[in-house]
Image (cartoon, rainbow, N blue to C red; front, side, top):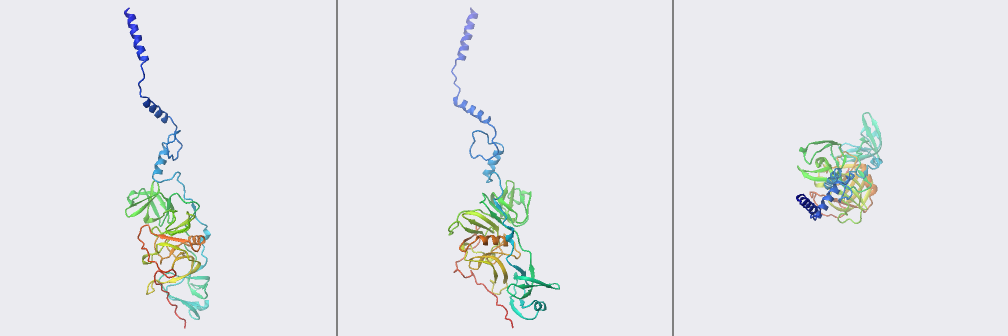
Length: 403
């Protein structure tokens, strides 16, 4: 009887347990099941995922890619959509030769030039700066070299058969990031500091690189050129890609000259099509900021003059190629004489190596806009002067009369 009662009690307890209502939190169960389902998903293929995908886990490599995107690095990392222009553009339209700093006599014949006496056609004033003449042939006498000038006559001179042949970049699409060039041999650094250590990657002079981030440190701008590399503005210049139409420019076609970074960029239909390093005016002869229009184009011409009353800075340059005048005596033009791009050094003009100057000359038209600006704000804004007159007095030494 007792056993029967015990059995009945056990059956009642079992029934209560078996049929007891389930009070477990339904939402918590669903959340647990969802989490379980989430972690059961496969890993996503490496890539950038702007939103959470529903069929894979963006972990591992995808996390790294997302982190790089947040730092400004696109995925995938690609090279600039650009190429070096046609190398034939570096050819000069005329042969040139360098003459000495003293007053130069131009003789009617080679024999008279060798002898140093005879019929003098004209004289070229002396000057401390570069002086070059356009030539069409040369001759030697002993260890001396003479050239026949395009304008006629003979002078003793040193023909120039080597000139800067470096070229900028021609773009077939506007890049997603800024970019730049080194202006001297340099290594990159592990961080934006000279104390961060050498990354082990070296860059030659005028190598180009992408720019993903810029910070200021230790008196310089630092360009992040890869996730682990930085280059200081001490040894580099940046092209800031900006397709926004500048002030006073109508249409989507202009030449952008950055006086702070010493770079030139050409925009056509609001797309970047060309960029290069330049050398603009220095000191009191700085290149004037402002928006201008090309008013004259010369394939090759003489440039001469002096801005000092004692004429100590007189220059005489025949055969200067690919001239685009946009602001009185200031022009964009090619240079064949020794120069360093990325630094201010001219009398106000925008100097380019011949290949780049010819590219811009072929692209340009009279009336095109030229926009000069200085993001640093250090270049003074000029006082407007009437078109057709130099921004300051320009002296031309008088040729010595021939007796």
